[in-house]
Length: 617
Image (cartoon, rainbow, N blue to C red; front, side):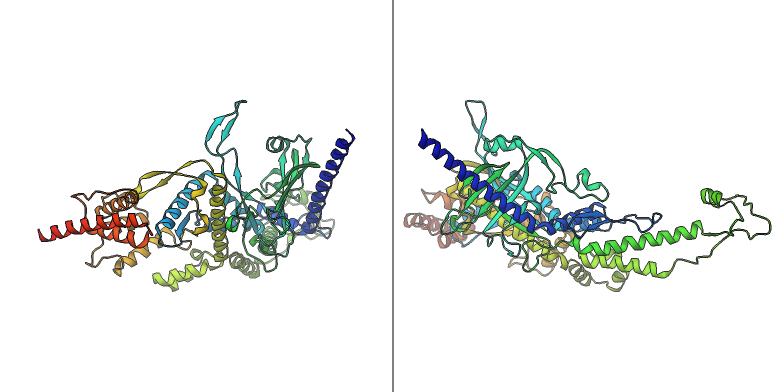
C-alpha cells in the first residue's frame, strides 16, 4: 500500500513538473512577443475605425487626447477599403489544387487521379474555402496567418452507433484558420516553421469542449488575454483594445516539439487550467516520407528577413492614415471658420453671451453700445491650395504603399495609352506588388494539400468512398484506402491563373486561335478542342456536343484497364486508328507485365487488321 502511494506521489510530481514547465515556457513566450501583439491590436483598431489611439511607453494601447476640446477628431478610414480591395484581388486565387503525376507511368497517373479526386472532395468537406478567406483577412491585417490541418474523429460518415447511442464516425480532415495571436514560436527570428524546435498553440476553449475532447472537468474562468474576434463589441469602443472577453473558458496550451534523435516521434503536451490533458508523440505523420511534423502552415502578407512573423500592409499605412485624418480635420475646421465666421467684438459693446449662444443667424438684430464699434467678421480668405495638394499626395501614398493603385482613377493614364497590349502591361505593373502575397497563398495551398493527403493515408484504414468528376463530365465513385494514396509521388500546384481575369482569359484564347495554335494538321479545330475552349472561357454549357474521338479514346482506355486481367473484344464500330494510338501509348508508358503486354499486342494487331480491311475495302 505504501509503495502504491509513493508511486502515485511520484506520478503527481512528474505531472506537476510537466505542467509547470509548459506554463512557464508559455509565459516567457508571451513576454517576448508582447510588443508584436500590441502592434497587431493597433492594426485591428485602425482597420475597425478606432484611429485615435497609440502604444504608450509601457507597451499598452491608450487613447490619444485632444489638444483643444473644440478640435474635431473625425475618422476618414482609408485603410478598411484598401484592405477590402486587396482581399478582393487575392480572392481570385481559389483553393483548387491540381495533382500532376511524377512520370507517365500508368501507376503514377492512377495515383495522381486518385489524389486529385480526394483533394477535390476534401476541399469542401474540410472547410478549405472558409479557412482561406479567414486566413487571408488575418494575414492582410496582422501580417501573418496560419492553417492547421487536423483529423476530426467526429467527421465523415457514420459507421455505427455505440451502446450509448452515440455515432461512431469514420473521421475526416479539417482545415482551420489560426490567427497569429494563438501561435507562439520558440524563436521570433527563425523564419521557417519546420526549423522551429517547438511551437505553442494557445487558444481559449470552453470547459465543455475541453471535457468532450479530453474527459477532464475544469472550473473555467474569464479569458481576456487573446484577441480572438476583431469585430467584437470591444473592438468598437473608442480607445479600447480589440480583446474579446469570454466567460467559462480556459486557455488550452498545446506545445509541439519536433522530432529529434531522443524523440524520433516528437512530442505534444497539452495543458489547461493547471491540468495535464495529453503528453505523447506528435499525432500526425504529415512530414516527408511518413515522418511526424507540425500541423501548421504559415501564410504571410509581406515576409520579413530574419523574422518568423511577416509585416502587415495595415501597419505601413498607419502613419499615412494619421496624416490623412489630420489634413481632413484641419480642412473641415478651416471651412467651418469660413462658413460660420469669426467675430471681432469691442469689449462691452454687445452682449457676448447672446452671440456665443445664438451666433449670427439670418435676420438677427444686434444691439451694441452707442459710440462703440459694431461687431465684424474677420476675413480668413479662401482655402489654401496646400490642403488639396497634401490630400492628393496622401491618397497617392495609400495606393503606393498598399499596391492597389486603381487605373480607372487616373484618366490621364488611359488617355495616353490606347493599345490593348499597353493597357495589359499597365495592369500587370499595377498588380505587381501583390505577387508576393499571391506566391505565399499558393505555397500555403500546396502545403495544405500535402497535409490532407498524408492524413488520409494515415487514418483512412477502412475503405472510403469519394465522388469525383470523371471523363465526359460524368460523376464517378472511387473506393480507396489510405494505402492507395502515394502523396509523396505527386506534385501539387495551384490550379488558378492569378493574373488572368475572365476577360483576359478569353482574349488569351482568342489570340491562340488567331495564330492557329489550336488547329490540327488540316488547319481546322477539332470538336474536342472546341469543347475544351468553350469550357475554358466559361461557356461549358455550349460544349455538350458529342466528341466521337474522345469517346473512342475513353473506350480504348477502358480496354487497356480490362486487359490487365483478361481479354477485350474488338467492336465493328470502333475507330481503329484511335484505338491503335491509345493502345500503343499504353504499351509504351504503362510498365505492364508480360501477360498483359501479350494480350494488348494481340488486341492491337486485330485493330490493325480491321483498319487495313477498311482501307482496302
